[in-house]
Length: 80
Figure (cartoon, rainbow, N blue to C red):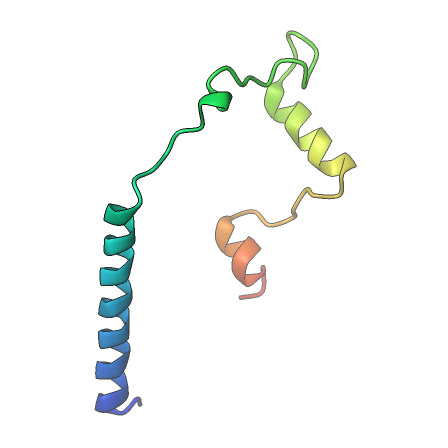
């Protein structure tokens, strides 16, 4: 079992990290890239085909298609 001091330190560190994240959010407002306004996925697949399937095919050709079924699987592995 963790020592009480270790638990308190972990809580304090987490709280400090949260405060820092909030400060960063207020200091640097999100910017929208105006160049992506007209961005589409036209041309990625033939008209009338499934865009999801075309995306998976592209990822598979590039060796980027993951085998994990969930984000948890991707992060921790299937055995976790």
